[in-house]
Amino acid sequence: MMFLPLMGTIAANVSSLGVIYMYILGFDFMRFMVHSNVEVVPVRPFEVFPFLRLLLITPSYHSLHHSSGDSNYCLFMPFYDYLGGTLNPAAFKTHGRIRKEGTKEVIADSVFVPHGVDFVTGFHMGLTLRTFAAYPRTHSRWFIYPLIPLAMLMSIPAWLWGKAYVVSHYTLHGLHQQTWGLPTHGFQYLMPRFHKRLNQILEETILEADRLGVKVLTLGALNKNEAMNGGGKLFVEKHKDLKVRVCHGNTLTTAALLHELADDVKEVFLTGSTSKIGKAIALYLCRKRVKVVMLTASDERFDAIVKEASQDCRQYLVRATKYEAGQNIQTWIIGKWTGYHAQQRAPPGTTFHQFTLPPIIHFRKDCVYHDSVSIRLPEKLVHGLNSCEHNLPRYVVHACHAGGLVHALEGWQHHEVGPVDVDQLDVVWEAAMKYGFTPA
Image (cartoon, rainbow, N blue to C red; front, side, top):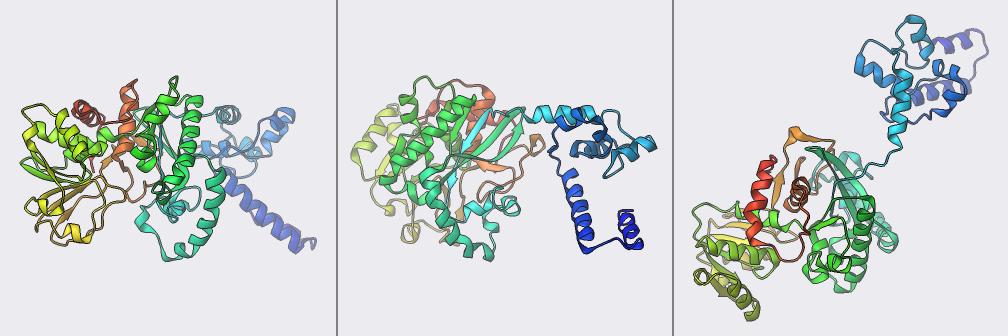
């Protein structure tokens, strides 16, 4: 049918290559437009010239064909549907309704704010290569790596003038969740001279979320660096009138890691023991009468943690200064980068649990490794999630991301910043399980 007009011009000897190309390209344009699932045609021309409704098809017009199945068959001119009696009576009202709804700004209830890990990360976002965004970071192919110099070049203006941008969004239990990526990379957080600029970007992001009416903003990965902003505490203390709740999500991260441990564990070797998460792990486990060998070079920090424990639990906290102290312990919890030689101190069959960034390399084949603490979302209740979070499979997110979701779903009004509240670990975990979250 589509070639009949061309055949007519050819038969009449009035055709040309230009006409043929324009017709085919125009046909393709119309076909892709009506299948785009985005209403791009304004309503105003149809109001001024009503007869256009029968001459020009719109994406919303064709969408009714797929939803009803018994109307709006014509791919170009609604006039033929009108003649055949297959014109959907709701077609024009649907066009106006969708255009009106499209002008409304969708405000997220909860926002997760991660950052780039390396220069390849940017190619795994929907803004660049949608195919790769649908797969974990490990799905990268060889032809991505020659593009790294381009990514490095683009990172310069992004660092100077960039702001947070929407990477993905989905709904869960009626909650609208968005991920706002920052134009930053992991190595920048390891350099103290960059902390001022990083905090500036984060502060602008928090204030923008507050202006829009976001309820909870969760800081991902190194955006809650203790040395940089005290786990988000800097922003809360500076802007005391914030309506958005700032959340580091470390409470659920800690709880999820603790639930990775075997039920019969009696002793653990803990590195990064004086960090927010490490401290919470130590205090929680000593309450459960589990011996915690804490690797730390600081007497003061260790003593401060011991003082926070109740008198009858302090005996379970033991300080160590060398990795050799863990050579007979088969449960290691890693909160600080641990290299090849340090891992060799662990006995065969050791299980490594970790909350360090980046995750440690698996040097031991005779040991078991748990990577980043993560949570699986209830797939049947998640709508609109079309990308993966870094190295994680679809529907699996970092525990801090899930922690922000729980904060928003529960409607908690406190900021989750600074130290992890040990008394809230079981509360947050039970809330997460209530909403169908499971350990990944």
